[in-house]
Image 1: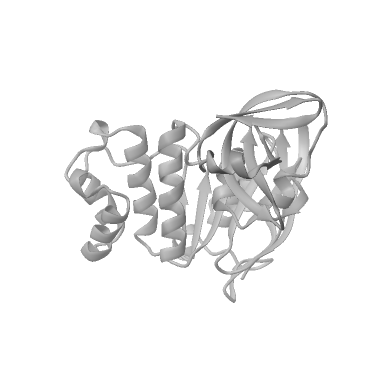
Image 2: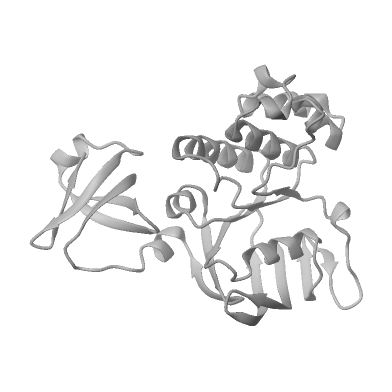
Length: 283
C-alpha cells in the first residue's frame, strides 16, 4: 500500500496554488494521473521520488518515506523513474547503460529480450530511434526491480504505432515484476489500455478518482458529429455490442450491430458519425 497525504505551495498555470493530495494506492495497481498542464502532476511524481520536498506524510509498504521528522532520500526509496527525456549515458552502449545501475547480467539480458533490444545491446544511444531510446530508459528503470515505477508522460514524443508497442511492453513489465505503477498521461487510449485506475488533478486538487471507463466515458453529447477515432475494445452486453472508441481527448461508447462487429478489429482507425442522432461506424 502506498499512502500519500502531502501538500506543497506551487505556482501553477493559473497562478499560486496548493498541491493537496490525500490518496491510497493498492499494491500492484496501475494508476494513471491526468489533468491540465500545470495542475501538479509532475510535482507529485517528483515528491514521491524524493526529488522534491513537501509537507505531510508518505508511507510505502509499512516504511515511512517522509513525515514531520523523517525524509528518506531518493536513492533509498528504490523506485524506478522514467522521464519524457531519455537521459541515457551517450558514451555507454545499451547494455552498459543498464549494467551501470546494477551489475546483474541475467536481469539485463531478460529485460533486453522482453523489449526486443537484444540485437541492439552493443549500440550507442546516438544510433537509436526515439522508441528504442525510450525502451532502454524503461529497462534501466527496471534494473533495481522497483516495487514502485513512476512514469512522466514517457511516450508523449513518439508516434502512434511506437506508442502502442511500448504500451504493451510497459504493461508486460508491470505484470512480470508485480509493481505498483503511477503514470502521468494525457492520452485517453493509453490510459484505457494500461491503467486499472485514474485520478484527475485540477489546480493541485484531486477532482476525480475511478476506473478508466468510469472517468473517460463521463462526458457525453447528442449533437451531430463526424470524427476519426481508434477502436479500443468491443464489449458484449446482454444481446448488444458496444464499441469503445478513443476520439481526441475523449473515450466514447457506441452501440454496433453484429454485422459491424464482424468487420471491426481492435486498434483500427475508424470514423464515427451520426445520422439523425444515431451513430454509424465506418472503416
